[in-house]
Image (cartoon, rainbow, N blue to C red):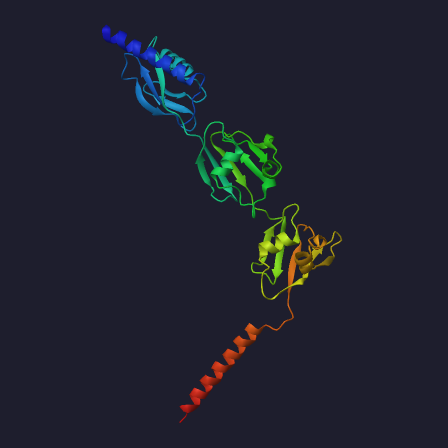
Amino acid sequence: MRGLVLCLGLALIAALWAQRVEGAYRLHPEDIIRVHIVGEPEFSVPQIRISRDGRISLPSIGEIQAAGLTPTELEERIRQRFREKRILKDALVAVAILEFHRPRVSVLGFVFRPGTYEFKEGDRITEALSLAGSPNYERARLQDAWMQRADGTKIKLDLYRLLYEGDTSLNIDLQDGDTIYVPEETQNRYFVGGQVKRPGLYTWRPGLTVLDALSQGGWETERARLSQTFVVRQKPDGTRERIRVDMVRLLNKGDMSQNIELQPGDVVYVSETNTPNYDQIYRILSVFWILRQLDYGRSLWRP
């Protein structure tokens, strides 16, 4: 009798403790719980993890939906299941949370560290992007990002408005199982070529200027003729115009009219100087001299 009273007391303390600590907390998939049936050790489970679909399996009564319920609600559901199966008429059930689930979010696409990360309750989109090392701004199309919930719901994310314009209404709370995808920028591009160190395609952004583009392309080369820099642009009628930009006037005289803003699809080209390329001439002469020496050496061995 004393043992039964002790068990009842412990069960009551556990239930009160759970209610005090968790309050209205509702169970999540991957929470680890203990289900204790007072006086019925064969029906008790010391430790069980709620499955990804939110269910648990208990001896004799089978599977029960647990996710979404409070511990008290789950106790009542287990008690009712015992009654329905005519196993225990009035079971004394105590559910305690042993370990809270660790919510996870997947951040994929053009971020620096794509992967799946644990987050804290209350974290938002910006925290998820930070965990993934932030978007790769040179390659990401921020306007067309999206997020998919665990239930399949898809939400459009304009990360440009969130990150550049400070629209915090887009900083949505994360939910367990969310997936965020940042696609590649394939439309807003421009090309830098000619006498630059890093020719290639780059991502256009509003307000981008010729100087910005050349800084990315590495225009500090010995053969660059900066006064003959050109922006080739396609007009709406399909024809192309060539805009001359004198970077010497911009850099030496501060003529900001030369630093024009670029448009998506522009080509920035730096011409080559007319000054003779003495390094190239020297290399050609060196090769010629080596060939002459080899030819002279072979002549000494002729029979």
